[in-house]
Length: 179
Image 1 (tube, helix red, strand yellow):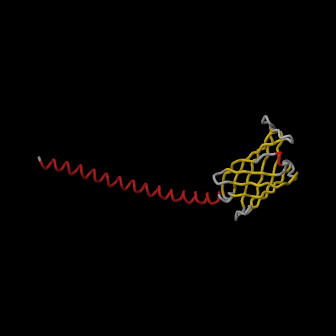
Image 2 (cartoon, rainbow, N blue to C red):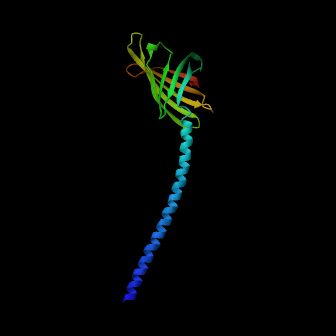
Image 3 (cartoon, rainbow, N blue to C red):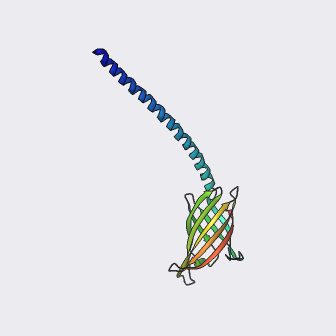
């Protein structure tokens, strides 16, 4: 009687041991695959972070407003844009009297290579200081290979105080890093 009992216990113990060995092997193979994917993702993230940081900093920008249909230049003026780590930005330009507009605030995002998008807005004011509307600028930016310049194209929408679009303008920009 003792012998069959020992055989049963021995078989059960061997089965449990084999299950444990196979389970560990399976998990180990899974971990290696996850580790490879993590390394590849880390390399990709590092590349994206390095390229995304190309835009970070302050830039002297020369904006040219253009007729959207003909591409003809209407007016050119300087602005300054600052792109913060994390995707926010500020802008200030002098296309109008300093009391005619407030500072611009917005967001930017990295797309691929050296390409970015940026959307920002600022409020407009009349000569008497009254609020007259706002402008929203949406631009596509491409930073140069070494990160010292960028070019951009933009679309500007001018809104009145009730939110109706009253004008649209196209822009091109050339910028140099402020250091």
